[in-house]
Each structure stands twice: as structure tokens, then as C-alpha cells.
Image (cartoon, rainbow, N blue to C red):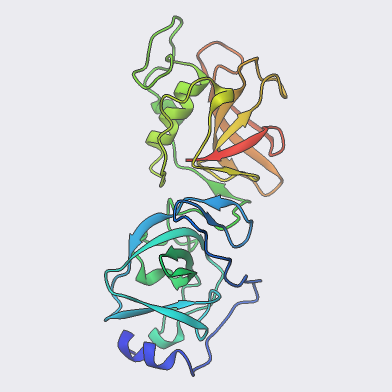
Length: 269
């Protein structure tokens, strides 16, 4: 069925919804720079994509399923994608079986759109678009960053890295990781000072792959300037895998799995 025909039927034809719990719209944030994740309440900086392949219009839904339209978008419109789920409803009108939906923000408000019609990266076999933030993600979330690609893996002295840090320090590695992981980021990690001075685009109360774990001064083994590490994976058992420098041997890579509650907080860039 054509996309144009689908838009006429949305209001009257029953759709398909999985058994997952789905939240209704969260209040639209006053500033487009900060929109609330509908599942976790975390403040998120949306990443801009466009509406495409719709034959003209795309329905914005109240929940991640068809037949609860709140407004319409046009082909080519820009939207701010806040986060994504892979367990929403299907699109029976276009014979699409994907369960992937994007929670978006525009000047008119927030809502859910079917991911197939947004220019996010192509969905993997798990239904996720690589690099798009998961709504209240946890369990199994991973980053593809290779920490061995860090350009200064064994520096014993004090050499500026050109980004506001010394090569081999935890802050230098964490900033490099944000610049290099291929995930969507909206704030630069450069020139932020010591680890305890870092701030992100927003603060996460729970970890997501691609976040920066931050320790306050002398908390859980951190030094008197704090510590930062890159979150490489979030595991279903409540632990996280981190890549970091300068934890233990000076200016050397360290990889460890720790409780998600060990860092003081998580920064998203």
C-alpha cells in the first residue's frame, strides 16, 4: 500500500502493538537543546535527521504504534531524534514488520515516528539503528570503539595532545574516544579541564554505551582530580565495561568491568 494511502487510513484502521509497555508523550521541553527521554526522564540533546521516502507525509503518533496520530510531518522535514526503541508496533499498512520507532522533537512538540521513514542509519538485525541513543537503554548496549586506536598509547612524559590535555591522561583518552566512536554527539569533549570539572551535553543517571563515566574526587579509587572513563558496554547484570587511561599504570590503557554504581555519574556528549 502506498504511503499516501496509509496516511488516509491511520485514523481508522487498527494497528499491531507488541506486549511491551509504551509510554505516552512526555511534555515538550522548552528548549530544543534538552528534551526528556520518555522512559527514563533523562535530559537529552536531540540529533537532527530528516523525514524521507513517505510519498508526502508522515504521521507523528502519541505512542509507538499506528492509529494514535497527533500531527503530521512533510517529506524532507527535519526532526530531532531523542532516542529509539525496537519493540513498538509494526506498520501493517505498508506491510512492514519492523518494531523500531524514534522519539522525536520538533518545534510543534514531541512524539513517535516509524523509524523506516527517518534518515537514521539502517537498522541492524537487532532492530537498532547504529549510533542512535536507546530510550532508557541498558543491558547489552555496546560501542564499536577500538581503544587500541588511541594515538598515544605509551607516553611516559608530559606532552600536550592538542585538545587541551596531556597525552595518556584519562581525560585525553576519554575526549579522543568521544571524537572517534562514530556515535552521534552534540558537545565537544575538548578543553574541559581536569576530570572532576567535566560536564556533558546532559547528565545520565544510568549508563549508556558511548557515555563518559565520571568519578568525583577520591570516590571509589579516583584521585584528587577525579577520573573519567569511556563506557564501552552496558551489561544486563548491572555492570559496565569501561576503557580508560591512567587507572593503575601511568599513561597506559586499562579495560575493566565494574558495577554501574561505581562512577559518580555519566555524561553524554
